[in-house]
Length: 370
Picture (cartoon, rainbow, N blue to C red):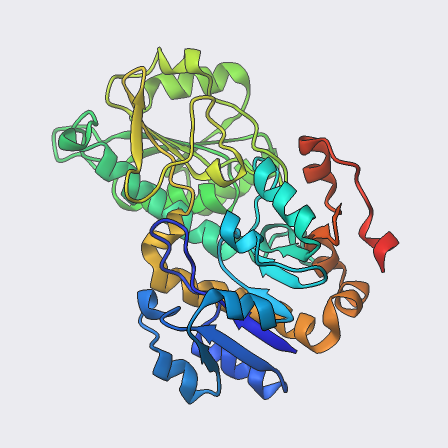
């Protein structure tokens, strides 16, 4: 199979879809790999590094899309990239379609076969291709939130860990999944007072046991959430419903009860955000203020730690990319139920139920297409 790795073009996106080591593995399995010129520069991989392992360097994205059987990316294709996709071409990347009707429409129109990293599953019921970026985003959410709390950034001027004689910041994490736990770990490591909310009592028991009470646990209902948000200096939104739009848990009315200069970091923004007032921002202009509360809603947060993120992402995606290249998408999803769960769009049809439901399309089961 001829695999193409284009250069990412989303605002301040420095990651690349595959490392030279990953390209080398694909080539060792008998495939050809084209990499767009300078695609790896943002994370320290030169064209020479890719050439050394046998890749072909291509000057422009148009040729990559025109020739490749499979496109491997990081972020969802931008409008100009969707226009370059062709019927039957395989796209393997993050998509986050539920809150993005325009991208969904463009992918349907293209006729491509789009497998989304964020809905590929594993035997433990997890999301193995989302997990590494969730780990990065969870940890970065605390760094970003701490900076946003600084007075010159519009925050309240509270130091996350406090100092002797001065109490630390109150950090509230909504969601006890991969993002939430990684955020909470970072926050307690910096000395903050941390509370995590979730509706799964087993998750709360596990967190309580693992951290010996250093992280306070609270069952997530409307009243508890209202009280916790009102008392917080920093709130991390870490709620995920796989493939579906995130629920709006923090309302605009709740913002009126919060302290001026407090900060919301919406890690769920790729799925539409879990704060009613959220709107996607970029690393170039990461924050905005509503009701005196600073909102950080960067849609590609792990891109800030591009090198770590690229390495972690390739580690996770490579085995699936090899399977797709070796077998082709039809045989791959026939033999691998987890890749089948990743199929979101297939030759003009919506094949992921939550996306179809949230955007008003007819759902077509993947089985009916193979």
